[in-house]
Amino acid sequence: MTRFFRGATIVWVVLRYGLDELVLSSFEHPWLRLLTRIVTVGRKLEAPRGQRLREALERLGPIFVKFGQVLSTRRDLMPPDIADELALLQDRVPPFDPEIAIATIERAYRKPLAQVFTHFEREPVASASIAQVHFARLRDRAGVEREVAVKVLRPNMLPVIEKDLALMRLMAGWVESLSADGKRLKPREVVAEFDMYLHDELDLMCEAANAAQLRRNMDGLNLVLVPEIFWDFCRTDVMVMERMNGVPISQVERLRAAGVDIPKLARDGVTIFFTQVFRDGFFHADMHPGNIQVSLDAATFGRYISLDFGIVGSLTEVDKEYLAQNFTAFFRRDYKRVAELHIESGWVPASTRVNELEAAVRTVCEPYFDRPLKEISLGMVLMRLFQTSRRFNVEIQPQLVLLQKTLLNIEGLGRQLDPELDLWSTAKPFLEKWMLDQMGPQRLLRELRDQAPHYAKLLPELPRLLHSHLQQNQGPTPQLLRELLQTQERTNRLLQSLVYGGMGFVLGLLVMQLYVRIRIF
Image (cartoon, rainbow, N blue to C red; front, side, top):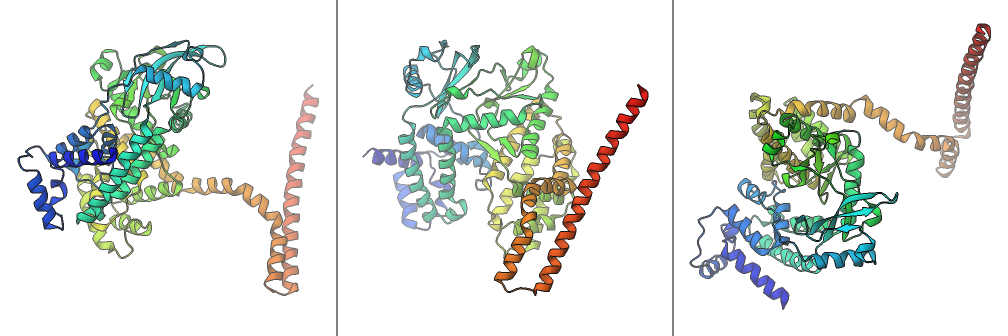
């Protein structure tokens, strides 16, 4: 019964905000079009469709707000006006009762709050759809009292999420069957992707692991601070991290008044992002202004502070190689190669005509090359490529969509800080080094080094493996086998000579040095 009333509420909100109009033109059943017109008589639809969708999701509650946030990253599926409006969704959620947070903490640690923290602030400092944060103090393993932030999961989230996800899957099936554009929009895949993100965020141990990995990667860069994780106090529904003190990056005038170099801050943000992407292949994928602060402490003045690590992106070596070749072709204006790479990677059907895809890519990219560098938006180029790709049924990979979404966030934030920011000049050294690492001799040396232990184990077994293979397959004559074994023995003797000769050479150098020292003294 609860699911029925929730479903009825969702349908009412959908009709009240005119969301049926988003797909009404492609309904294949005239009676459905007529029915929705009758049921929704008197409603006003003056607001743009994207705004109506955003307001409807806010009306439906935190889970649907989170869904809209994830949906805003899929610019390959959404029209620009809707994606831009969904990007405005924020987690404006009232905090839950501090007594519930304390009960969750005590249940997680199986001991009273006072035995865990020397001080705990009952009023939360931040509240979102999944969790809220309290400041506290505790003693670490060394007995030192530390200022910490305690993130506590909202109670009973899993049952609520499962019910709403079940309804989302049902609605996705309706959209796919009733709308001509349903299959292209892939609503079921989008809901499945949201399901994955949401369940990852429900496990605070996963977020803690993300934070620890980013902290380790960023160590030594001296541009960004990532809070330390206190693993002894981390559980699935409670996470304890170092308390960070900073000014929200959106408060630009306050930062400027404090003496922060704002143009440098903008460049540093780009450097941090490209380092995470091109060097580490592991990047913070939720870098909106609410998750970024700037330190004003003397020891770390002007450094970024990263928060909230529920969503991260990662790139495999295959992803990096694909992107490296695409960037190389793009900088050379080799649009035919870009089109061929899309086909070779399987992102577009093999039957796609290269010349047609090449023309589409050229239409998107060519206008940018005649602009000043500071006016070129790499994020916008990727976004337009994704939009154009819909014509060719391109399968956009989720990790690259996260990359594009985060790049748009970084560009927007950087140019908000410094309108003269030249993203390309800042990114160029990373791109050049990345492409050299991916496609130059350094990659060959790296792969040889990585595979050396495997080859060292395999080489001594080659004669036995060869003998066994030849016997099983009744291969070459014993004479050929003897010749192969003799060749192997000669190779072994040569290697031994080199090793012993090298040792003799080194020993000779040591004797000569000893002789010289004796003569001197």
